[in-house]
Image (tube, rainbow, N blue to C red; front, side):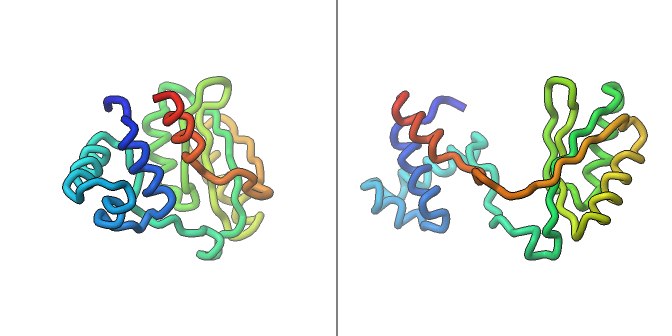
Length: 157
């Protein structure tokens, strides 16, 4: 994707402030035509700027209040298959490939500590997983955010 310009950044800031804003409301807020806003949103979507249109749902509200990060070390040659196997573990809500000594960082949501123990055991049972290390989430101190990055991008543009 080409660099975001000032108007793109203003549009993204407005969407971050009010994710449910209509194209008409965004156009009014930014002083742009509806067609301009719609075209820019379509371009941003095509270029992968928007990660999701889903509403974030609390795993705790679904009965899974225990969250943990599990560091996973695997045999490198088997990483694609291991990743596919991990994707079938419903308690895994997110996973990232890492550089360094740990290969994958997996975020899980569980009902209780026994469920967490069992989930970790299922991950360890996957052929090619050599070791795991589990860290219990005590609380979220900085939620996922992009506004500071958008402010930085605005200053840099």
